[in-house]
Amino acid sequence: MGAVDSTPHNRRVLMAKTGLDGHWRGPTIVATALRDAGFEVIMIGMAKAEEVVQAAIDEDVDLVGLNIGGHVDVAVRAVESIQTACEGLPIFAGGVVPPHAKRRLEALGVEVYPPGSQLPEIVDAARRLTNTA
Amino acid sequence: MHQESDDQDWVTASGIPLKSFYTADDVPSAHRQNVGAAPGEPPFHRGAYATGYRTKPWRIFQLSGFGKPEDENERIKFLLEQGATGFLKEHDRNTADHLYNVDHPEVDARREDVGLTGAVMQSVRDIDICLNDLPIDSTYGHAGGAVVQHAPFALAGYWTVAKRRGYDLLRLPGTGQSDYFLTYLGCVTKQQVPTDAGLRLNADIIEFCNEHLPRWVPVSIAGYNGADSGLNAPQELGALFANAVEYLEEIKRRAKMPLEKAARACGGVSFRISMDVFEEASKLRAARLMWTQLLRDRYSITDPKVSNLRIHVVTAGSRMQYQQPLNNIVRGTLMGLTAVLGGVQSLGVSGYDEALSIPSEHAHQMSVRIQK
Image (tube, rainbow over all chains, first blue to last red; front, side, top):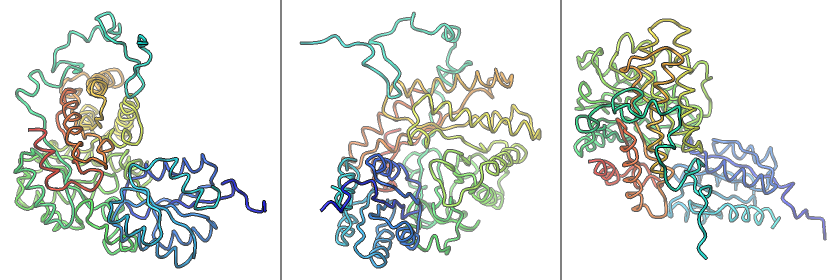
């Protein structure tokens, strides 16, 4: 009892964009909200699947947030790479994710926050996924 | 209990306080001298041309492109058939803005994204296919090259196609963009071209066009990306003209062409129009006035042909909602009207499916119909 720190201060979230598109406002706003909630946010921007994995290992993160701006197959490859290399590491995702893409990602265990999601809802998810709720 | 609302409670989208009504006494003293100026007269706040849209309608100018050059060509033809009066070529973001070959590992890692936002065009042949059967000698075309590092390729490719078709470059109409806000804010790339190198590229393009393509608009500064990333109306105006001053100072330093011609070349700009009708229409009026006064006060340029700012508007993509896309037709209409009330020369209305995808054929058709 008491061994687990129940505040997010030592929880690290990796934020990455899977695509090469120019839509940064969403991940920037989410990263800022997570920082303001006490998380340590590592924003690596546009990254290939192996770069996301490498950063997740190097930074010893507790959660990965993916911004998805293009085709869902690109995001699925990143998710599968992370899950293979970092077993049990939770992943959540946002961006303009259409319903069919949302279903595919959810089937892989990824929580998806499409347009219309509220920041408190996303911050709560980050707390829950890092056991600091 | 009904409470009298205080004037301070009402502000524009930019936070400018609004009174419940205005009288002639509210015109600021510094602006009084301008009040009598007619449309088409400096400082042009009331409009660029004396007869407005009665003699010169705005250009219907929609972004378009996806897939292969053949697909993009087909869509451009569709838009022109529907009533568009110019066309914009979109290049695939992965291979254009990022300058990756299509088989580069960065692109291969996102291979399903290739062609989602524009056609892949990596050779003059590709550009020729994209422009197949298009009257580029008489139609105002946007060659692509939105970001500074891609513009030299996009422009040279377009001009080469024109030359091979036997057109006189001295008479070729069109534009590129080479916009700093797209390059460093809206469409940033994994590896960025340094800003001073970007400035050199743009000055090269301005000087080259002055010599070889005098009817071409060499660069077009865009307020859009700053605005859709959070700048309010005064900030959008300030950022755009600060950028124009940078270009003019560089051209002045290089001393290879008359500054008046450079000012004319930099005077085709674009703004974003969002949902605050009166503030946004006023922004375009203020833009023309600011450019006229800036050229006069900083550079002693008073030729009305130079100081008459030409404005393109794209309606705010960020106001196109994901949840109820058909409502976006109403929003697009309102923002398009606002741009027209502000006196634009050229307009693109965002597709109603903007939040879901690049425009479908039907969304494109609606964007044109809204303007007809």
